[in-house]
Image (cartoon, rainbow, N blue to C red; front, side, top):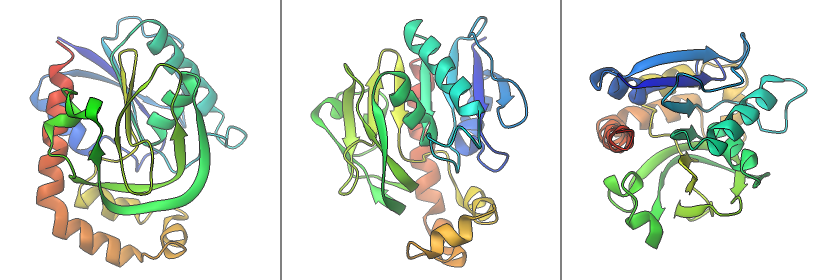
Length: 232
């Protein structure tokens, strides 16, 4: 049985649709609640690693000291070529672990069409869904690629949406989110203020999530099934 470590940054930022796929594929999941317990320093006994999203930025180590530990664990994954999936904050930490950088910018919020690059169209995971598929986004930080990384997708306002480095895949967007996830997300501290400053109310976001729920869940399931297929 494949054994996979999930690193979770906050209680409301969970694996969502990805978790459903892992259950159906009989993956043995080990969870690290990084806000409340030590982050492992090795991946001994693990076949894969997932680092989820979070409300914090990668440069907020003073308030969230576990970020440094997660970045170190991602370096281990890269060095040992452990299959890894980073989502949003997880992708940003992955980029930094590989020698890239992350910078602040204008937030990208909502369901954004993701455009595949030429390399992305040949990728077994990101090309599992059609070019231009809208995925949920809620980020104000942006990745500059690490040396040796392959750019797989972008959007109109974000130069890097998906990339590969070693055995790792980073996704700036959120295929794991569905309407129930969004309903919980908008209740988290500071989220309503963040949304309001960027053209959304919590009620509008939840309504749109419900409208798009079936299509977004289907796209996320397809993408995560394709990623699990690569684990062997």
